[in-house]
Image (cartoon, rainbow, N blue to C red):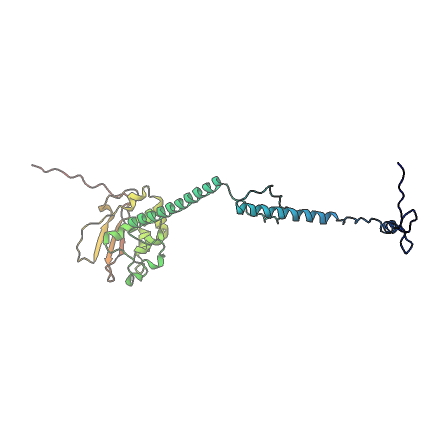
Amino acid sequence: MGHVVEQRPDGEPGPERRPDGATPGSEVEPARQAAPEQRAEPERFDAEQFRQFQQFQQFQEFLRYQEAQQGGSTPRYPPAAAPPQQLDPAPPGRPKAPRWLRWLGKKVLGWLVFLALLALALILAAKYIINMVTGGDDPERPAAEMGGGTYRTNKILSTEPYEAVRKVYAQIAYGRPDLACGYFDNERGIQQRFAVNTGYADCREAVLGLHEQVAHVNDYAESIYPRTYDPDATTIRIDSCDFPIEGGPALGTFVVTKQDFEGQWLITGHEKGPRTCPAPPASTGPTR
C-alpha cells in the first residue's frame, strides 16, 4: 500500500504553510521550553510550631468529642488527649494527726478536767469540815483582828460560852497560834497569863508547845462541848476537868464574859489546872 501525500491548497506536497511563513505546531515547542514546570516547595515549620499545631489539633478533636457526647451520638474515634498543663504545686499544709492520736488527746484532756474538778471539790470539802470543827473561823483572818478590840464592832467571836473555849482547844490541835490567842482578852493581858499558867514564855509558844503534845487531833479539838447555862448570865467559869479531855493536855479553867456587840463571848480570865484531869468518882449504889 503506498503512502498518501497530503495535498496543500496550492497543490504542493508537504505541510501547510501559513501566510506568515510559520509551520503549524511550530509555536508549541518553544512555549513548552520557555515555561518549564515549577514545583512549590513545602513550607517549613520549626519543631515548636509543629508541636503547637499538634496540640491545637488534639484540642479540636477533644471539642468534637464533647459535642458528640452532648448530642447523643457516638464519635468515630476517641478524643485525642488534651495537652498536659503544668499546675503550680499546692503549698504544703499542716500534717493531720492520726485518728488514734486525736482520740487519745481527747481522753487525756477529759481526765485532766475531771481531776481538776475533783481536787477543787476535795479542797472545798476539807475547808468546810475544818470550819465545822473549828466553829467557822476564817483561817485567813490575822491575829490582830482577834481579841484586839475589833469584836466591839465586828462579829468575830463565838456567841456561845462553851464554844469560845472549845475553839481554843481546836486551834491548839491544829497548831494555829494566830487564831487560838485571839480568843483571849489581850487588853487585860489574858494571853500572857494563859502562857504562864501553861508553862511558856508567851501565847504563841504556848500554842505551839501544847500542839506538840496532842496525840489525837480530832478528839482533842472536840474536848469541850456545849452545856446548859443561865441565859441571863454574863460571866461563866468553865473548868476543863469537867469534861473528858482526850488526845492532849488539859488547859485549866477559863472565865468567859459576854460582850455587848452581838452577844459574843470573850475569854477574860484563866486559872492554872492539872495537865491530866483526875478520873471522875465512881457512882455508888444506894445503901440500905
